[in-house]
Picture 1 (cartoon, rainbow, N blue to C red):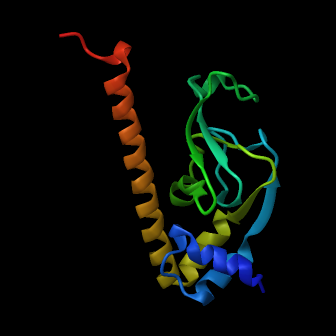
Picture 2: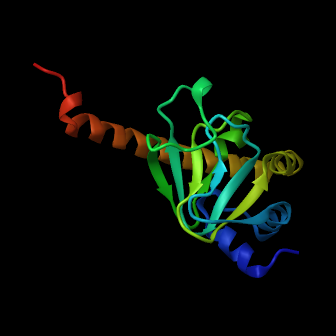
Length: 171
């Protein structure tokens, strides 16, 4: 049985909004805690996605490489762009859960002792199939979470286009 503090934490996360205590316990039982140090790579852009992550403590930078994926190196480069910094309670890696595709960005621990709760996608999908009500609520919450992230990204792109003189169109 998972500890009470983990269940209380998961209850506060947006992607688990409106899930029952029993449903949260099922999710807590299939995940595991992982600890990363500052600068450590959690996963790389274009790698296979296998887990959904929730930040228990610390911060995670989401990085995009300007290099085409056939020229990627094992190292993150100075050119990698930090497009977002995620904090306690936020999730990432959802795209792997939704389409079982490749990661769209690199995730790197931004602080020492960054603690994550990693949930294997295959186990979470199996839970959703076994308990359709849990699956419906979770997927609905994930969709809302992804929509918010897309809106925030759109806003950042618009701000860059409006405020970067080199990008402005000449009249």
